[in-house]
Structures are given as structure tokens and as C-alpha cells.
Length: 343
Image 1 (cartoon, rainbow, N blue to C red):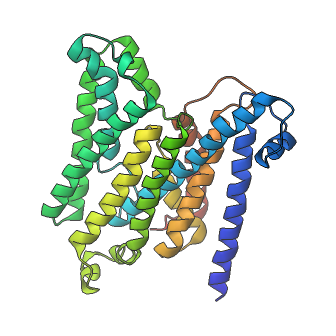
Image 2 (image 1 turned 90 degrees about the vertical axis):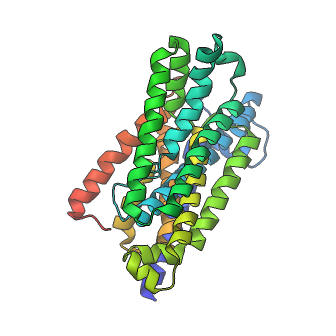
Image 3 (image 1 turned 135 degrees about the horizontal axis):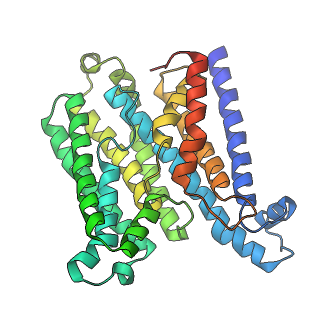
């Protein structure tokens, strides 16, 4: 009873931290807007300067919600992979899904000019890039699902996923070698990751994908708890290993593939946040871990995006660089302080 009360207090504190991080993110940017004016705009009042309303509602608010979806989705997919493979180094992209999305984006950004002799700029838009990346990620996911039905050993599936990632990365490298400097630069900018380029329709679509991934994950809580004690134990509980693995892989594919398609390949979050959550909550129960990692991931992405914006500056740093520079020292400090890894 006392333990359940402690968890409730922890979740309440996380929700408060999420709200504060969201407000901080919405209040920060290249244009300096007083916090009081930000709050008045959010509550529907007319601002002193008309353009502030456009900046808040059309750019900063969608960007903040995108950060929440990206952080929560990647953290959850990382938790799923670490549990499925019982490997603390497993992340949301170990199955090659991110590499598949990169291949789709590379084919659009760099492959078009190689095949036609004309630059691919005319075919580019946020929507076409997201579609190309989605197709690439889900093609890899489809192949991995086919392999998962034939391979009984989970570790063998992990190695196969890594090999798919290596193959797609090799193709991307070949495309990069033969592409023009302009096309290569566009691909590099996409690979930096960004949460600020989504329209309202794209944000709703990404939100729908994340919700489906979360529902599949919640459905798999019993299986996830059992996988931690080994596949033999899971079978003894009457859990179908093949079916459970497929559901977890589909959930991870939706989360990691969808997020990579819309926001680019964002590193570190999916790998580190599950470890941070286990250290702080000190539990292996996925009924607690799933909402906890989503909240921690959302807070981390909001804070990283706030730093990436370089408040009151026109410059924006790559979100990938910020997530690693900010998060990695925190993980190292926690692990050194605890002197052990909970897994």
C-alpha cells in the first residue's frame, strides 16, 4: 500500500515536471516573448504583438507536442527491445527499422538525381520525405516479422536485425558516395533530427501511430514481465512466444519507424531513458515502467529541444547532438552513483 502511494506521488511529480517543461519549451525560441504574454496567448487572450500569437500556436505548440510524442515513443520502444532481448544495450533501432527509414529518405534525397540525372529538389516536401522514410522502415519491419516467424531464438533475431541495419546503412553509404554535394547536405540535415517541421495533420498522424504502439505495448504487459525471467518461464505461463514477439516487434516498429519518418533518427533517448527509469523507480513491473518511461522520455525531449533552440538566438542546434550531450553524462553519473545497473 505504501509502495503504491510512493508510485502515485512519483507520477504526480513527473506530470508536474512535464507541464513545467512544456511551458518552458513553448516560452523559448529565437523570438523573445515574455512568459506572462505566453500564458495569456495560451489562455486565448489577444497578444500585444500580433505575430506572437502565430509563433506560439503555429510553431511552438506543435513543436512541443511533437517533442512529447517523440520522447515518449522512443523511450517506450527502447524499453520493449531491452525487455524482449534482455539486453541493456538494446534500443529502439536494433531491428534495423531506423536504418530502413534512413534508406527510404536517402533514396528520395540522393537516389532520384542518380537515377534521373536531375536534382530531387522538385520532389521534396515534408510529406514526401515522411512517406519515403515510412516505406523504408516498414519494409524492413515486414522482413523482420517474416524472419521472426521462422527463428525461435530471440538472440538470433537480434543479430539478424543488426545485419539488416548494416545492409541498409551500406546502401546509404553507396548513395552518399555518388550523390551531389547538395543532395548529400540535405540528407545530412535530415539525419540531424528535428521536431519543428510537422504540420497539424502530420502531428495528428504521428500521434495516432504512437497511440497504437502504446496500446499494443499495454496489451503485452504480462508477456513483457514474463520475458524478463526467460522464455521457458514465459511458456510455462501459457504465453505464446511467437505471437508475443510479433506484437512487441510491431509495436516497436510503429513507434520507432513512425517517429524516425517524421522527426528523423534521434539517438540516445530510447537507449538511456529506460535505464534512468529503472534506477529511479527500482522496479521491473511494466505496469509501472511503461507510463514512467514515457513521461521521462517526454520531459527529456522537451528539455533537449529547449536547449537546441538556443533561446533568444536565431541558431538551432541538431537535436541529436543535444540528446547525447545532455543525456549521456546523466546516465554515467547515475550508474556510477548507484554502482550497479538494474536489469
